[in-house]
Length: 132
View 1 (cartoon, rainbow, N blue to C red):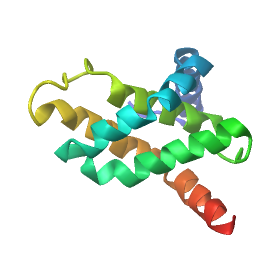
View 2: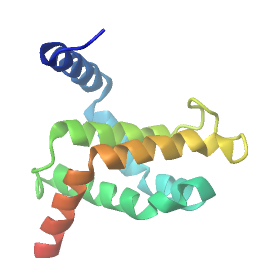
View 3: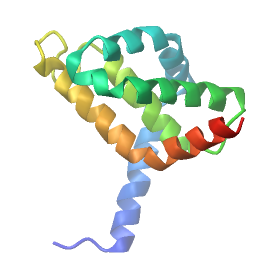
């Protein structure tokens, strides 16, 4: 079955409706409050080490977005960043973190997808920071 452009747009709209419903300002605050803890998780687990710099950049972007200093990032990217960081924080996710090595593969997958999804946003943010 082939999906036409109209159907793709509808699926995308429904996805973002669900995502917005799953996200709240409380989630943003929880992610920011747990920056150090999330940083320790990412920096302390071998499968996640390659994401340390990007996670730092995501937190910097969220802080600048929250303060109103940088509003170029689309809200859907902010939502994706927040929910992904909270996923990494959660010890009981698809593959529980207490399972050696394998427990962080799902977290690495989520971060990898997030980086791919937000690649242009990250590049724009890096350029904006470099100008300041």
